Amino acid sequence: MKKTDSDLPSKPSVQVIERMFTLIDVLASREEAISLKEISERTGLHPSTAHRILNDLTIGRFVDRPESGTYRLGMRLLELGNLVKGRLSVREAAIQPMRELHRLIQQPVNLSMRQGDEIIYVERAYSERSGMQVVRAIGGRAPLHLTSTGKLFLAADDPQRVRSYATRTGLAGHTRNSITQLPALERELSKARASGIARDNEELELGVRCIAAGVFDDQGRLVAGLSISAPADRLDEGWLPKLQATAQEISAALGHQATPDGTTLRGGLSLPVR
Image 1 (cartoon, rainbow, N blue to C red):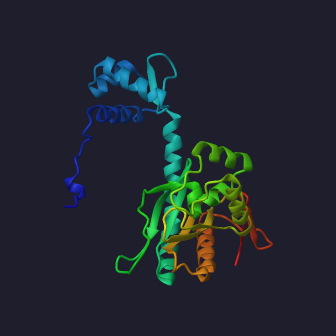
Image 2: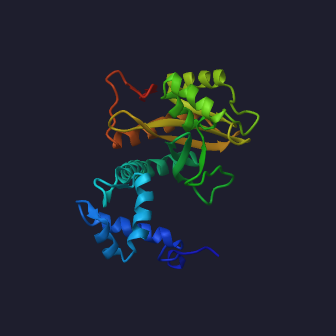
Image 3: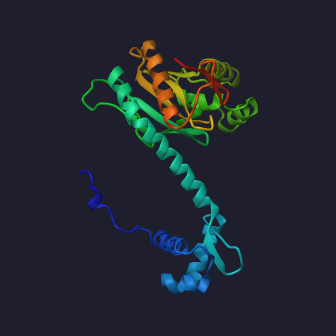
């Protein structure tokens, strides 16, 4: 049986995590650094327990220790907050255009973003009543070189970074169509840079093809990819103009502007404006 929000526990099930949250809440209540003694008094934790947890949080940069025995919130929380803010703003700008694109093509539309050496799917538009579909789960991940959106991000990297990615990952494949050699990947990325479009030709999953266009922010940075996933024999090249137009609509909502000659050159990608 599916759990509802009311079925979920109101507190973390692991005691140390609950204590960590309590410590962070106390630090968030003050702008200046707080002494260990005061933190212990306000949380009800023994000083040695509070010190141990705060020390671990300091190692992870979630907490700073400006002076011995004093603590405040760390920069890592700001970094994560900005990351979440950026994702939420992209999702908010994308959801309605994604739904309209899905209405036009009757195939799932995905919004995904880069996280390290993978993409993560952050939003989707699809119909539960439609027939055979390729639906990517929100929160799902996939290697950059095996996905259409991932190739857009790799295409925006310089050659050395692409080579470093290949060395780190080994370009492991999932299917017989997967690109597992650096020269082949570099040729694929060159095509993506020239066209602003990237493809997954049954490289992540046999029987599934995808096409993706980039979404750019007001600074011209590639922040997300908009993709269409479909059974391999159903992917229609006629969807490309609609996909590009939708990606450009989302980019415009994020403050991105095209160049006067009708193209936008951002992150190494040349994106035709239709």
